[in-house]
Image 1 (cartoon, rainbow, N blue to C red):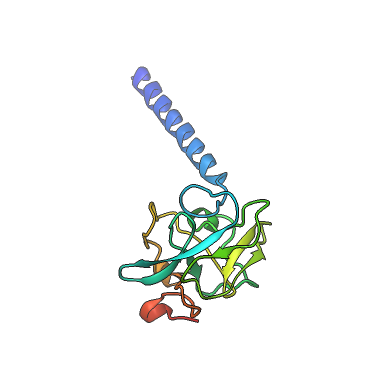
Image 2: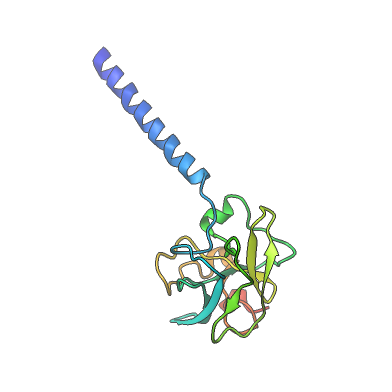
Length: 167
């Protein structure tokens, strides 16, 4: 029996180390400029029609951009671990102001985040991607917790449907 007990302790120890390494990797993740690979140069915001949601804003890689409903550029609420799930759309170091593609009718700008990054805003609302969107044109973050919504290309705000309305 001593051999069996030692084997169980070893298995538990290995599992504990694996879990610690996994958590350490998650804790050190840093926000990127959005879903998909990071882009160099200016941050570009474009528009794309997504079935069921309509024409929404997307980043240069085609990933849907979202807004946290109660948040404004003067009141950034998604910080810390929130940015692992909802990476803010940041201006790359050394890049100029964000640019808008065709169909982007609102005002693009930037705001300094509490963590020091420069985030892209649209009509005063900070923009984010969703880590659950694994490819361009997805809207898996739409309506999450009743406060996260894809940002419409019109200047009216987010595509919130019955519970999320525009601004």
